[in-house]
Image 1 (spheres, rainbow, N blue to C red):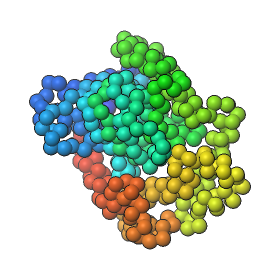
Image 2 (spheres, helix red, strand yellow):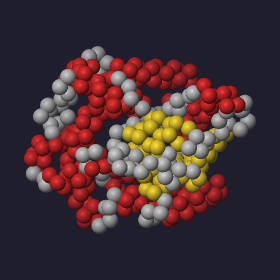
Image 3 (cartoon, rainbow, N blue to C red):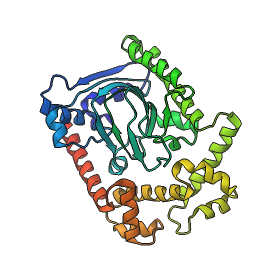
Image 4 (cartoon, helix red, strand yellow):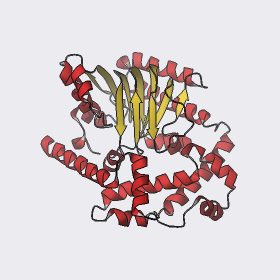
Length: 351
């Protein structure tokens, strides 16, 4: 994404990719009339997530405040809002270029209810703690009134440290877990001090925060031993690469993966438990690839994409797609086209 496609308040942030400057912006709905507040907030955060409006919410007003700091390739925000529904749909993921990780630490209030393709069935509901989002995957979050600190970390940093980083999407590290107090103390201190920090100090503070967050999620995933963590990450990476390389093979199954890679079935199945099992992971990767192909190849029929990715019938594919993304393949394609046209109009309007 280049600066021409960014909203005005993020154009400067995109320019602050080095340690040479801190880009800042602030926004509040306080000075707006009640009926303007929600829609103004929706526009403010719409470059990352969708905020579906309701007539009731628009009419009663909405409290939202955010301070943003961008430096050293990272973005840090201090945000307070009323209860809100956030959604990063598969259509949005398939049409924009946001590929970083968002770590959200709840200083006041709770995480809320988070759903996405990788949410473990036994995962906790609304709790206090930290939630991680891979912006290359869809999610939906019903968030109560809260104050949260968010750190957007480049994928290159997270991938290098975790290797199997995509698996943390939707994970919650609860308050009281190892390292959470240290993370909370560090980032709340950053929120207090960053307005007065020089660019180098600010970048170092955010980098330290990123390392603490990554360590907290690594510990939550029980990857504490360096050699064991490296082995597990390497093998899971091998499995994921094999799956991605064979998504269009009709005979791709958990059994075929285990046999092809000569791995222990029980171990691999346990490692993919957070994804709902290896079978669910394969199905979700096929659905995610289908979503991308619906955008990349608008001339292809939905049935062609479905059969090409191993689905036995168009109806099976449509049902699975709707369960995963809460919309039909046709609706997703139409929404993606609308997002592309809207982005094109905004780019032309800024020239």
